[in-house]
Image (cartoon, rainbow, N blue to C red; front, side, top):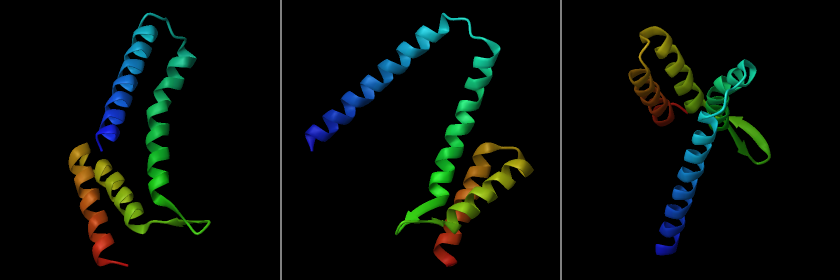
Length: 105
């Protein structure tokens, strides 16, 4: 058990150091507008990939849509559009997703 925690600690430290080195190297360089535009889309692409991975669940060689996760994501998106506040919208989506998971289907 100690070896697992040691491995997690060492990997987190090495990840943190590599990120800091990357930020320091990129801070001194002048980026073109095309590269800056590319980097602006990276967070959106990563979040989209993580959400799609949660919605589409592989089961027995097929992809199945997880209805509680899909409804939770859609309710979060609608809540963000309506109330324009991130944290309450995520809480609303999580509650709706839990309700769908526990009481429907």
